[in-house]
Length: 266
Image 1: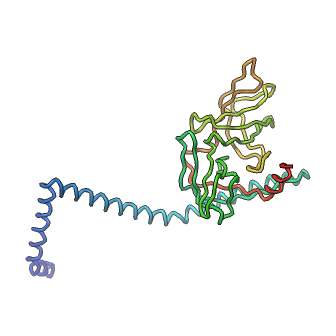
Image 2: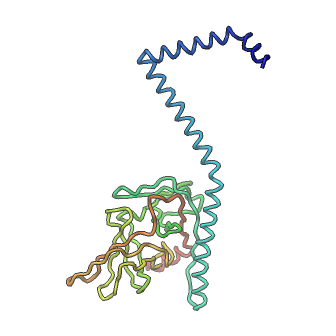
Image 3: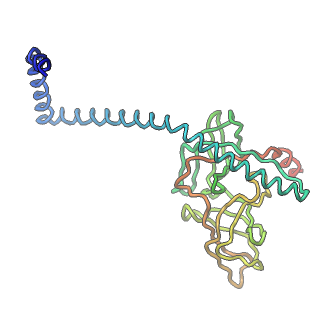
């Protein structure tokens, strides 16, 4: 302790000078509007830089956890697809081959009349326009365009997105399309009136196109309307995917898509 006091005593002149400088700066900033504004702007900019740097460091260390989560979800989805193929094989039914590739969502809109996602993954990752995009909860959208490292995706919350679907309980085909109302509700169309459609019925993908495998969740029927003059139900479904929280997705790669599309075009 004595050595500390001796050190401070020897440096007393510098300490007094430093204290007076601090007092002068405080007086200048406090009683001069221009200097006060410059100081606040500089301190805010410094705080923003520190916060950004801290967030970047935090995101960097979170990458390991994010990658592990993607791997686990990828493995689970691959296992589900293999189970479906194995079931079809047990019935001696030919199946189509689908793979999934994980991608991180870096931009996502859900409040607009036309909504998109941007994902980290493009041509370098084997992602191409037209491929389906899903999550562990269900259908997300379809790839619109790609660059080397990025891709934009038509969200299911986009009026151009029409998903060929099936009412799971009755195996009845229909189409799901967002009606631009709320981010969690879409319309189920073209279900004939003779089908006993009920609230609570699960709606899944039909697999009738080259975009999505069959039996991927789309939503659950939440509202049914059928009047005497109507040929088809007017129905609403609550979407399976929560578009307000979508950190990761999976791009569906249909290995036989080109062959199927070419034969169907004849």
